[in-house]
Image 1 (tube, one colour):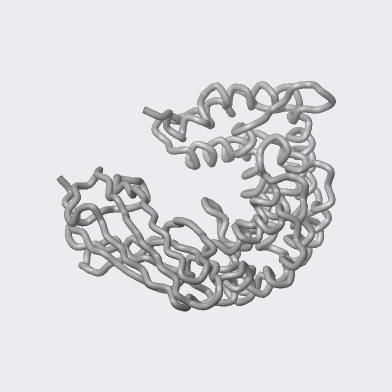
Image 2 (cartoon, rainbow, N blue to C red):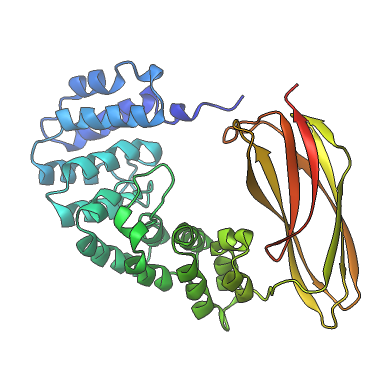
Length: 366
């Protein structure tokens, strides 16, 4: 069984933080910090643990934030000397977000220094929310930082709908202010950074699909392979939804002369089993056509309606009169993000975003 996520913050990390601050913070009350940070830690989940450690920092670090910030900065690895890294820095980032709002520039500078050792993407969001224009002016400069972790912070920390983090309502409503940041990082040499840019654009696409399709159209012409891959990943939600402009960006037109025959190897399945999907696609148009084939599993909900989840399958270039036959296995297995309900389900084949064929099956839970 996998180690529980909460154990990423454990008593050993609390001790490591106490030891580092004991060396670097004048008057730091190590005993009180250990008592407050470690009290009942085992019963708490990951973020609860982090917030408890953060609150212990509030009680024991100097009341002067500049003094506290200097102590925290001194705890980071410097000049080849060891220091705090990894998950031990999450509560430190949260401390800066809580106590540093009245010291805007100092706090952003500290979070920038922290992020090469553990991402500060959660910490910077309160500053964006407090004063978006001021924060983004600083964050924009990070796109030219020599450290790829800092460049990634510029894109990941500004994502409007960053998972596990506070949302940024102003940027959800109007993401235009972060587009220059994303544009500056489109051709970043690090895949780690480019994936973050793609994820941010995909976030934006959920609220502003036409804006992202237009952004991709603007930047895809003559793009190198790495940028095309980024833009394709950024468009994944739009492509699954069959957004016409997004499909057009990658050479997928409305399907013409396409016929599909689809079947499953069984009409009933027990949760935990696997379906075999069989699809035949024929093309009788007079010109070749690029097709993107996906499928949507319409999962049954508690009220008897269904909700689709789109899965990627394949792409192909079909010549006039050409037919293809493909197969795929799809597991119906328990996952933490979905609750299954027994009864009728269906799978719909999507060709360039349009429904082309379907088949049904009944799901039993045992």
